[in-house]
Image (cartoon, rainbow, N blue to C red; front, side, top):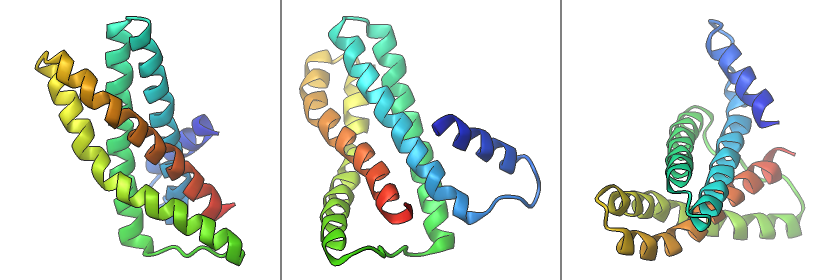
Length: 154
């Protein structure tokens, strides 16, 4: 799915007049999914003491998260608010997920920058300590971002 969405995005972005705003939710979900994959891979690599692979994965996750944020903001500036159209019970579940996702999403960029800055400065004890807080929150936000997309558009 992710590969197809990204290929379609590249095709549309390089063909004048073909980008539809309706394409962005799938792109955003794909970017969140890629961030999730790289976060998990980065965690596995650091547990195996493969520091270089860990670093590449975490920087990739950060990059995909930045691309997501740009794409998400672009979409909502042009599309506005998207409303949930499911059942009453579904709506309650959706709003719980959306609320926790939104609150934590506001914190992730701050935590990610702090975590990365400790790593770049070689302050690994502080990096490790804050990463234990950052990773689960970032994973939750990335995973629930895909879930919110699924609930809204499928």
